[in-house]
Amino acid sequence: MEEIIDKPGIFMGADTPYEASDAVILGIPMDYTVSFRPGTRLGALSIRNVSVGIEEYSVYLDRDLGDYAYCDLGDLALPFGNVVKSLDLIEMASRQILEDGKFPIFLGGEHLVTYPLIKPFVEKYPDLRVVHFDAHADLRTDYYGENNSHATVMRKVAEMLGPKRVYQFGIRSGIREEFLYARENTYLILEEVLEPLKAVLEELKGKPVYVTLDIDVVDPAFAPGTGTQEAGGCTSREIIKAIHVLQDLNVVGFDLVEVSPATDSSERTALLAAKLVREAILSFVGPKKE
Image (cartoon, rainbow, N blue to C red):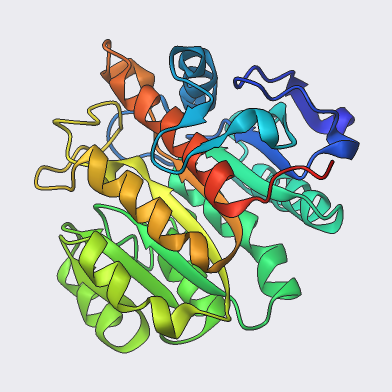
């Protein structure tokens, strides 16, 4: 992996060597197709930088990161502006981590990066389900004629997986055609997150699940540091609880995208994201073996 990594990572406590790690953090610094405010290429770095401001111990789970083996590889080296080549490199990195038997935690970057990240998971897990937290449906066929866009990512994922394998929560923005498509092809919940998620846990049990979390699912009052803010979202407390609810499922991969530090001088969005990464490790990865 070293030859395709841009720089070392600094997420708190992530000092286990790659070979001995159960979980791997990798930044995906791509924001070439964003349609409003750019800046998410710096999202992973901002999450790392503020992670020193939170504890390794989770009061929610009574678990400590010190008992877990995880590393931070830094950011993937991508050719700026070259969307197609970047998508290929992202897919290659995802496949390598998966083949090495590591649990991946990918930090965006714009949401389009989820599409190549998921591709190797679909190959390995034919019965894969995707849990998608977002303010936006992301189900367009194209955005101003471009089909590789953060606005088309879940349409691409849904078409790859087949009908009713994408579960979307917190959605409160999109064009009419997206919601018409969702009626037949995804499980889409408007606005709400936690209670509808609890309602589908039984049908997700026993299935491999990939979780993709766009930070703009959270109301901008709690998470203003994102490129396409959308009022009316869930609270930071609710999205943390949503991660905990998923811990009894077979979660095989996780990404957190669309953190944009340029729109949040307080850094509270990155702090929330760092906390979500901590809770994801503690929820989805087993403690290291003695």
